[in-house]
Image (cartoon, rainbow, N blue to C red; front, side):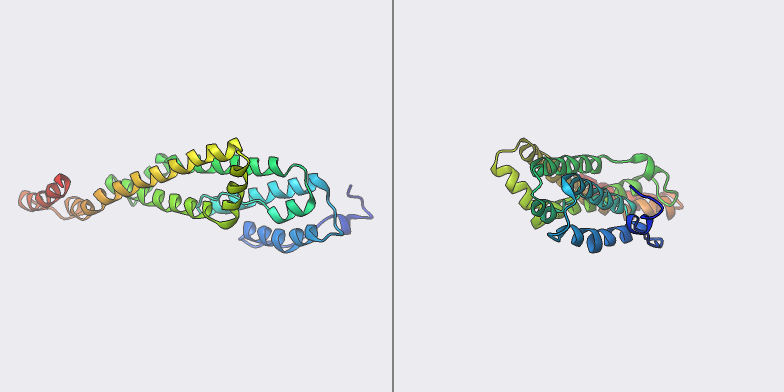
Length: 220
């Protein structure tokens, strides 16, 4: 409880710049995490779980701010060191959070792209698939992170149902990436010709000269 005579010790105050999320993450890593890892500091299971949730929210929010999809990795060292009896529950909630983030990434927000004034038609579609490829590759890299891989391995070892269901999600990501790469493969060669049609074809003859090679590509 914060009282007038304890406010200096009970509250933590610091200045923030425009990179608020990054600063808060650093405070978490450099201040709160080391404190809880000290054996003489015992915050209890509730404190550890709250810290885990806060760290996850920070990672997700910081990623969203940059347009990235983040699958938050729990502060496993602290959780294990604390002797928390709810370790399994925390790891399961982590997998659930990953699944939610990935399912959001698999959806395409068409409205956001249609508001881009500098792009239209197939150029919007190309950017959609290009952004999607970057997000999916980023997710796969995060899943292969040693700590994330360890969490999945430990849960799979005990036959955990969330680990099994996440394998299906992983396959969905790989399938979506294959589809995305295929669309990019066929769409990218057409863009120069489409740009000529939109911006550079002033007469029927130049239009036909542009359409002919474009149709040849489509027939491949």
